[in-house]
Image (tube, rainbow, N blue to C red; front, top):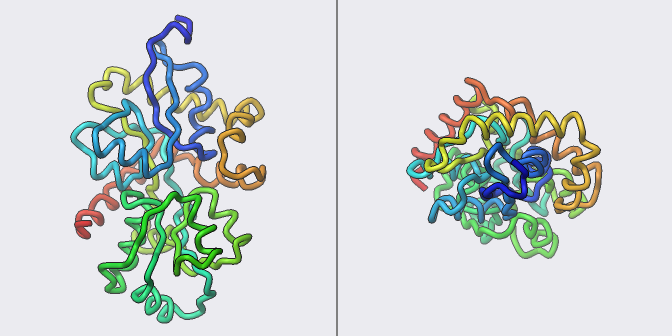
Length: 279
């Protein structure tokens, strides 16, 4: 069946390089009986659309949001962001040499900018702060790409950065006193479960085919990056090729293809820790 003549299914994804890399071939070719229509949105918006009304049949979301939404969706094995040394960074205009001083300032901070309350980044921050007895930090959600510019303008004390901002933050003259991914790995001895793909339960008939197609899409981009590159670059928030490549290398891992038992254990631990906090 011609891709243009097939009925379409909407897929929510971010414009970040790891998502466009993973889904390029799938978006181009679709499934046997469906074409795939991309719906680009910020990760927090995707989380909200999944949590509020289960709007999109297929969607990338934060793993924390997936832990909160179990009524209408199932988690696909493939397509997620799960790995090592890839967690969110807590950044500040001040270069802290003492953890004690950092914690003291976090307790007093008027504004800690975060990329959304249902992001895994926010959950990791709250778990970290909880370990130091900080239960009610002054967090403020904004679009993730606005966090570094806001810090540079002196509009906040701290910011929580994700995605390609990991590679560009030094150009904003800020420092990263805490790597929350590293903290998670040291605390749990598990990889960091950042994002995953949800499929709505009324589309379970395509679960197996979609999972296989995502794996094939990852393999295609790996073997044919030159063909996927224009699409990836067109949607990226940064124009630097090196940052885009670093982003893909960091967030598209073997776990993106198949999380395995370790990946499942990481998500289960995240769900367990989230339940303890009762955010």
